[in-house]
Image 1 (cartoon, rainbow, N blue to C red):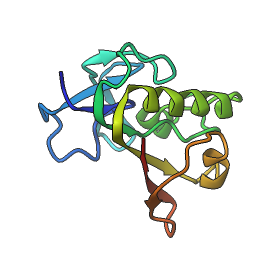
Image 2: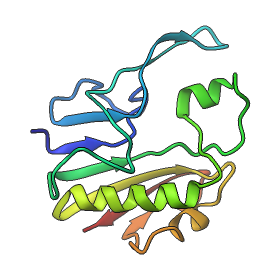
Image 3: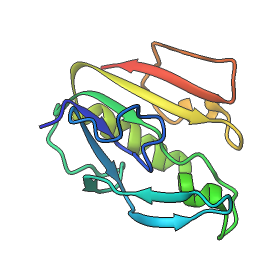
Image 4: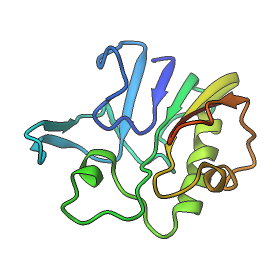
Length: 151
C-alpha cells in the first residue's frame, strides 16, 4: 500500500507527479474532462472514491496524509471554482472536524498531516477551532495556508 494519502485529491493540482506511485489519491467524486470557463479541462480521477469523513482504510495506514478539503461555502451551481474545488455546506464545522479525526486515525504514530486551506470565505482560525489537534507550524501570511500537524 502507498505511504501517502491525498484525502481530497481533486485534479491533483499541487502534485509535481500526478501519478506518483508513493501516493494513493482519494476523492468523493469523479469528473471526466469537464470544460471550464477558460477552456481548460477538469478531470478528477481518484484511485479511491470515498469521503474524507469516513475513510475506508485501517487505523495507522499512512505515514503522510494531505488534507485539502473544499474551502468554498458560497459558490453558484455553475461556478467553475466549485467544480474545481468542491463546496462546503452549512455543517462545515462538523464536516471538517470529522475530516481531521479521520486523517489522524489513518496516520501512523509520529505520522505527518499536511493541511491546505484557502481562507477566502472562512478564516483559518475558525477552521482550526473545529479540531482539538494543534498545528506544529505553517505559513500565516497569505490567503492559502499550508499547516503541518504531527500525530
